Image (cartoon, rainbow, N blue to C red; front, top):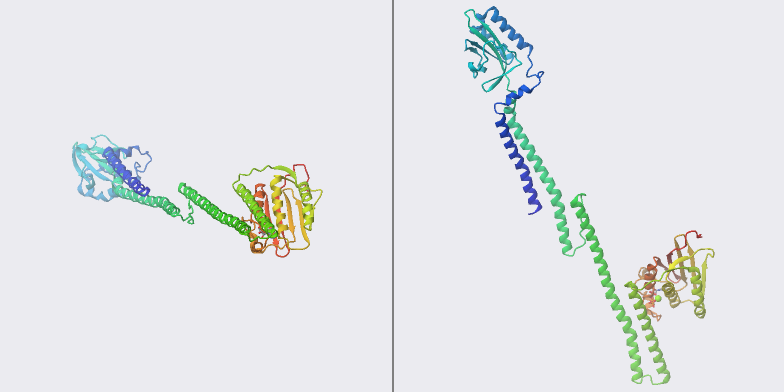
Length: 490
Ligand SMILES: Nc1ncnc2c1ncn2[C@@H]1O[C@H](COP(=O)(O)OP(=O)(O)OP(=O)(O)O)[C@@H](O)[C@H]1O
Ligand SMILES: [Mg+2]
């Protein structure tokens, strides 16, 4: 059963059940109180309006009493009794006169009262007492007196006292109708808003889920409220974003994999083709002189070394990529470490006519946590690039280092050809080589800087490149400073 249908049914029940209950209760109340409801007036406090004897009542009754004493015959005359009508209606009462157990006179409103139901002669009473007579309740005053002939006469001044009954009878249909109307309106409005607040976001979720099913991860949904459905919408949206992100990463991996295979096959195919060509040259006697043969063999050797280098880099790259290479971090003083490394390099650099300047503040503390071997690989890749792409006669390498309390920054700058601006954003991508390098005979796979980046990131560091065409290239490595507490950093 759908939530919508369930809500409709429950709301119908919300309307019908109270109505049925209300009707049953009303019916029971009517049965219980029918005829007795008037008794409730007895529970009213004596000071209640209902019981209050008004001054006019008393005066009117006194007048009758006086008349009965002074001139009882006139009291019983038709003219006199009819002259009392206006006075009676002003005090909202009726008059009854009983003579020797017979009704002698009664006003129209007391037509239903029977003589035998009236209190017996000699029971004088005031308006305070309520008397049930037949089906009606009256507040009544009674005055008894004898005529000269000995007849017993009783005067009854009576006021109908069934206000509850009257009230209920008058207002019950209006109240019932009003209650019913309020009940229906409240329930109708409630049902509308509740179902709207549930159904609308559910429909939204259904639509969003449908989009995801069809592979469209761009369709976002926003939670309007923070109720259970709002939280569900929020969770759904987070799931969509996560899914989209992993989808993108998956696609990126897939593209990278395809690109990697294309590059590897290309980079391996080229040297293999030339090796094959040179071997065929030797086999077919094209290299017919010993010098030619030596040259061919030397070229084959160089190509094989290139391939070896490429396979090595590929191997390292894929192991780094898969996170399968263990790092042995130790706290090293990078100043001493670099001094030793450049010392090792100095022979090669002199041979290539390169001036190396290593600048740092001697009193500084340059401690980092690093893997010695891997970090050497990073430096080698960067410095090899500087040497490989250098196009000036006076070659220069400037290494500067400075530390803050958070980081140690090492910059390696050369005065080489520089890199075109449009290539810089891609320079750390695997297999990326700037167009100018492709045409050169420098060789290289385009993996050197991506390997350097991966290693530096494993060190929780950052690597960036700045370059100006025809001026030079500067690579900056930033590593977290591992200076112990208490050591001063300048
Ligand atoms: N110091 C530099 N001066 C000029 N160009 C540079 C320099 N360093 C890097 N490059 C450019 O960046 C590209 C990428 O360098 P990277 O070291 O990743 O690859 P590679 O040197 O081509 O090959 P590999 O290092 O794998 O043998 C190079 O092809 C080159 O175009
Ligand atoms: Mg390189």
